[in-house]
Image (cartoon, rainbow, N blue to C red; front, side, top):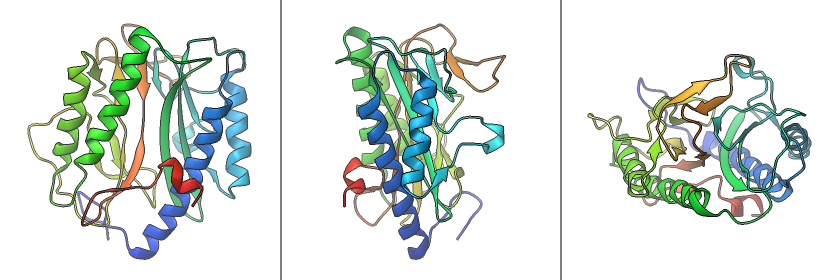
Length: 260
């Protein structure tokens, strides 16, 4: 059932979304294991295409509004929507954000993670990844029936600010399931209004995008897709799809769903 502000999915739709989300989690886990210094972001994109095909799906991103990649691969100051390139070679210590979308039998999975290539992150990079992960967990904790979208937004921003970082404002989380982007939008910073109320059957893609410096971003003027921090600071992007239930949210793209 689609309303002006939210989408409530039927039990049949939810089962399809669960399968698509599990397939997406499997693909992302394979990419996380594969990331290494010396490989190009195009190699990651091609590996993702192979993994998605093995899951019986297709990329939910390829061709979406003209996007030319299988997945989004964004490195260091690139926040989101990076395009795999043969000349973009991953170096030791690079932060690599991978955003994966899979369409399976008409349903969508969408998940993202940022990792450090070649070893554990250090310094600001380590703090940034910790902030993004904790912000995502805080947002999911507030994704409870009866709460409001702004409860999620406020929780995400509180963690980000506690670390001394900023949340991107120009791009937000969203509903997801039967289409890649469904209502409602889910900002990663507190709003003046509560936003739509959460109800069982809603599926949300909660995705903090966190910068070490300013929240401001710029879109690459040449490829017209890659979003970078305006000040050149590091960025991290993490994302889970969750199902709103009568209790705690069910994380649909948690890696364990891929092996169940």
